[in-house]
Image (tube, rainbow, N blue to C red; front, side, top):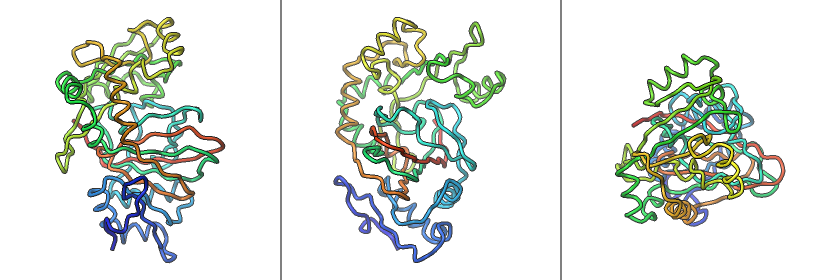
Length: 318
């Protein structure tokens, strides 16, 4: 039997569960222990499993499918480049190793998201490459109430212009068929507009916060700080604005009424994430299981090869 008291602290949080499988195959272990592991995730929001002998993407897919007791989700309506494997397993975001990926809850820019997400470290980086996490409840509390009120009352409007500069629509929607794109947009309350030369522009209005579907706790749940032009380095942001103008940027974000979000407020939000971060050093074979509403995740820069896989399940929507 596993409980909160079995978790070891990392950066002040009870997170790590060191497992002795006694030679059991990963799927057998998952079947016997999934009730306790899910209880831990529900109570704690995050669990790092160490000591389970998973040797590849196929076993990882079967393991988290069993643990989460749900089919794994196809990653459609993408915001970052990834490589897919069989069984709806994907690489973590394939941004250059020198870049930081800021904290975010998976698919929080959309009206549908996974309630559960699992990470598997096949190969830790030589240096860096951590996947820090942050408690979305704590982030919510760290943001001043006047900023929260603006976001909660107005909502967030995500605008994307698809091109080779960011991601083409064929990669985002995983299809070459415009009718498939239109069908997805209709089903997910996404405004779309086909423009000259087959270009696509979309807009989607979503809330800035959520009440957790089980506990009812308020969480900060959006990607305004990632989509906003101020997330780019200053020289890159200036070049993008000179090339595209504010209306044609590959991605940007506004309040739901179309008004601009103050950069100073986004700076405060980014700092709230930074102040709430919990980091750990990956070891080969580690499994990080998250309640995707309660905890965000990110990535630190790294040196050397690194391979972390991701699987998502238990869909939810607004």
